[in-house]
Image 1 (tube, helix red, strand yellow):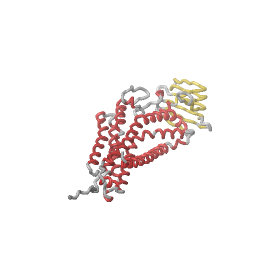
Image 2 (cartoon, one colour):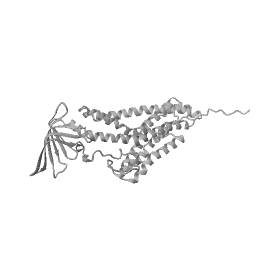
Image 3 (spheres, rainbow, N blue to C red):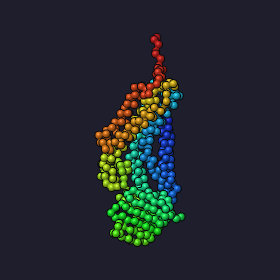
Image 4 (cartoon, one colour):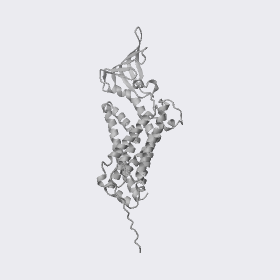
Length: 377
């Protein structure tokens, strides 16, 4: 790239970084605030801060194309306001002087988005699932108020009498109705979460178990009794289960069989494969959209609403993509449209830009020739 290309590319790249950082900051804050009620419960805030941070890689592939569109649009708008686009156009530079730096940055963003979505994000989602499965039951216990009860997914109701200064639960009562033909009622004087084992458990002490109903009831006294925390999360003896977002690319591509802990349907994995193969294309589509909207020199009066129309169009295009992606799980015939939407947009916007048209109208500046005709001798 020449000096002009590097100048434009660096200017766009800086704006992309700022926009992406602000967007991720907002997402992280939203995730933290959404769990604010549990942040102060016996150190559980550290778990949720970690969870909120691990969710960020999953947001980057969808946020990066919009950050790129904003960066390209803002850069082109500023260059037009400072008459730099007019100078480039009238100096014989041509549209390639804009196309090369914009698509260089778009290529970097697309490669980054593809890497994060296929490598970093699945690993982060798996870590999030594991953390939630191991800690959600403990957080439920922490969130319980004294002398209150809560019914958990699967048919378990838990009630505590009090919580001492060390975090131990006292006078705990658990009603297990997961097997209607053989319900059980467990009472214990004390309970504490034991994380030293391979599978975290709720360790009950000095209690009693009643199993059965009616006249067929058995009573068992115990000194210690353990209940898997997975029973409180609805996963039971299955442990942690992963879906299509947590699956590595090799599983989606059929290079390894679908087996536990991956429990989603084959249709869901097939759809996720095509989503990962196409999401990065939106970086090029939105870069071309910004070029088609603001890449031509304009008079100051014809700039209109600036970057607002192209951003609204970008939102519409991505919404169409999300809609097709969601519907493609149950309708395989829609899978080609996962590719068609971003690629068709890319081709259309490139044609608009290279043909010298204005995507949203307005008055373009006439191209002047700096060459003077040779005078006859």
